[in-house]
Image (cartoon, rainbow, N blue to C red):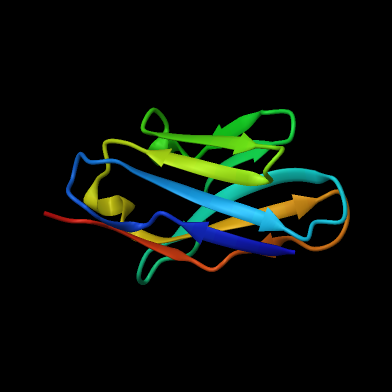
Length: 115
């Protein structure tokens, strides 16, 4: 399974970015896709997750600002990030969990929020 993430960049505080992550090579039913992030000197944290059925969950710090969505036909997950803050600066990773086997991870995409 390969995951290709894109959409990161430099944005001013209060701005928006949309991350995309396209999955290919999945052999089993995809149960969930998620976004994680890791800031310098901090542990990686789960930001948002979405199941095949559309259920979502977010870390408290992004609730009301970030929105995760998924195109099941394209095996692609999106993260719409609004009202970005400097503390959102991190490398963002997408992940995929199938009905069996290990979790798969994409390469990270850098998000920098700075004026």
